[in-house]
Amino acid sequence: MERKVVQTSKAPAAVGAYSQAVHIRGAEELLFVSGQIGLDPTSGEMVSGGVEAEAKQAMLNLQAILTEQNFRMGDVVRATLYLTHMEDFAKVNAIYADFFSGEPPSRAAIGVKALPKGALFEIDAIVAR
Image 1 (tube, rainbow, N blue to C red):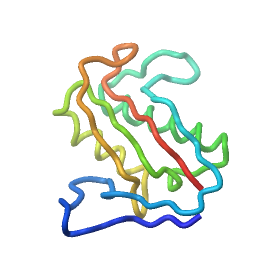
Image 2 (image 1 turned 60 degrees about the vertical axis):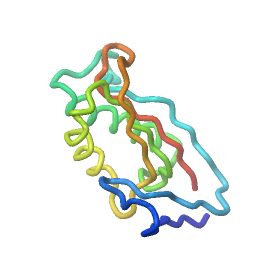
Image 3 (image 1 turned 180 degrees about the horizontal axis):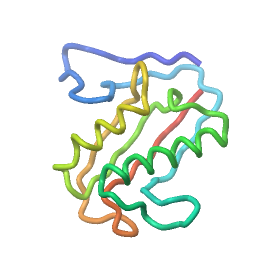
Image 4 (image 1 turned 45 degrees about the horizontal axis):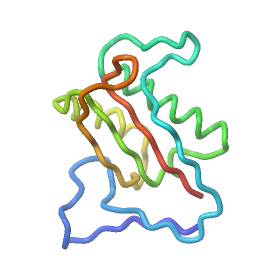
């Protein structure tokens, strides 16, 4: 599979830990990961500590699903973030960036009214290799 980050000065530059686009050619496998929130996988309860703790746990949950299928975080080509409070974006973005080294995936961040179980943050992803 060939993975190429698309960067053009004819569109606004990325203002966070994401790429303008990711071009995938010759992917043999795709994985579509459903939304992950800050649920502790052992207890099934939301982690405490606010949006930062929830974002970290959601990212760990995403990572666990990828690992189960022998994918890496670097295989994520598209992520969507959902936040109930957009003013939390900078906090979430910092945690998100810690999980992606090198060229990050394309991404959207969406403000929503509510998330399951009262979560403050959710992430879903498309993964390819």
